[in-house]
Image (tube, rainbow, N blue to C red; front, side, top):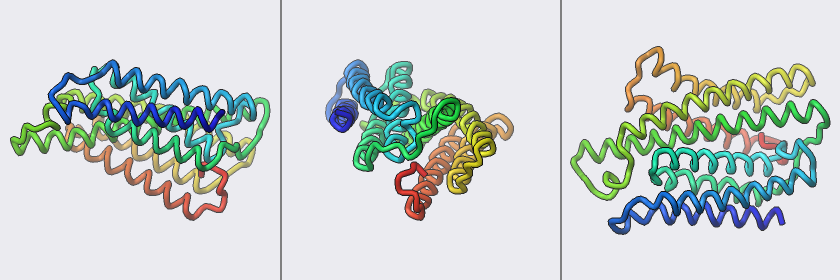
Length: 268
């Protein structure tokens, strides 16, 4: 049932991306309602899968590679619904929904097996770290997607090519606001997640160097976006570029650590 629910979630995420692409094929109004409904159906199936996993394995069911990736896909989809509903746009779905589908599919293929089975307070502590960290990463990914779209739309505007991309993408100001707000949420989530992870590592002497390095790298990347705007006065274009570059670097670092890791069952 868990595998089937994940497959259903992936199907709805891809369907949302396909519906969001309709304005590129013909002149139609952005199908916000249809995209949000498809995403919500995917989120419902996804949440059902993780609820079933939690029922089978307990509160710490997000600790393995598969469960961790699955939860990351779910948080990204939820973030996408919130952003698209508030902005009344669907363009971010073109970028983020396939990513959520890919992450969820990878989780299903990796296997939904928790790596650790702590109990009691330790389990709750670890779960809170995972939840907050993935909220931060999902917000960071949203900022990077908005930043990338900002750069593409700005290039279209500068070159005076007012094609489908220019018509379909949200205004530059909207993309900049999404980038800024998502960066702040990402900073808060990762700050709390890294703080809990640090305290957890000292309390239970469970130090994993790649996890520490990657977590700090992600935190530094999103912190640079927030404080670059606040302290250095970064304008929209530079913030958009930095969000895309730093997030891509964080993902590349994760891939390197995964390839080199001997702990195949862990997220990292």
